[in-house]
Length: 154
Image: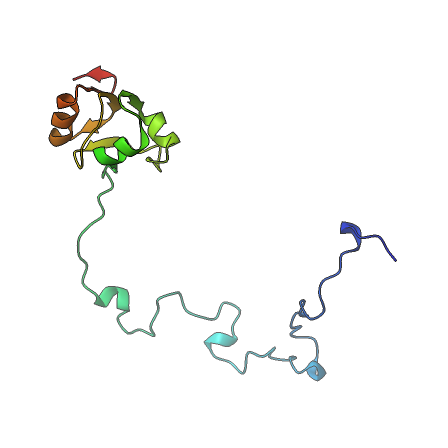
């Protein structure tokens, strides 16, 4: 019995189909016009139409109304409610973006983080994030916590 290895791998029976060989004589069944028929646009080497072409009829993309626009300056945010922070962190302490990423609360590290005021907070936390809503700010400060936005205490 031969040893197994990458040097003697063989494809499974029936998994590899031989390519269609066109233009190789009349007896092949695909000679002369090579399965393209006689004359016409599709018989030519570059025969065919561009994607979306509907034979001269006004294409669907031009018939439908155009609405709205894409705001290329839109800023995406990762938002986190206070109740989720209370579940993942012990009473008090400092919470930075890196801590939120580590706990799985922030999925996209490149997006800025904003703390929302949903739920209650159970300790005096110091938040080092990009933004905080007014409701969240009240709850954090009422619990004895602090907020540091972009390195500047507010």
